[in-house]
Amino acid sequence: MDYFLTIVLFTGISFVAYGINSFISKRMKKEFKRWGLESKRKMIAYCQLVGGAGLLLGLESNTVLILSSSFLGVMMLVAIGVRIKIKDNISDILPALAYLVLSVMIIYEASGLF
Image (tube, rainbow, N blue to C red; front, side, top):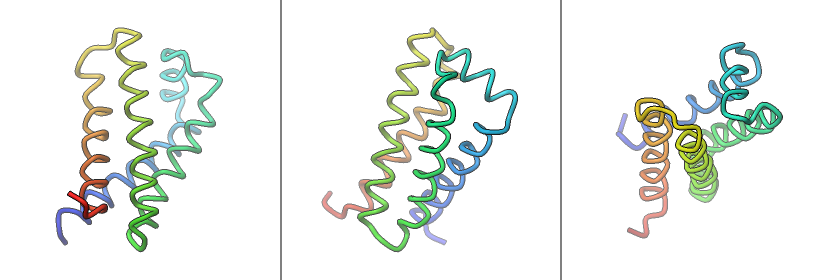
């Protein structure tokens, strides 16, 4: 398995799992409240599911892969901003930053423009 496929599978599956957890996990419900996003939890969870599924389906279509990865990258930029705003520790910000980097890597590889 090449590194690009590994990155796409890891990122896609992670977002699908995170989306599911955002619906059912009591801990995640508390986190959304802490972030001030309690009323947007379900919408964000759907977005995570759609973005993650888009990455997995995007293995058959670079356009879908690029759009899904761009969407998730924007979500991670917003997540970083929210965590900075509420003054989270850098260790709490690093996962969102790592997924942002993975999204950029996917866009870079899938686009073939660079």
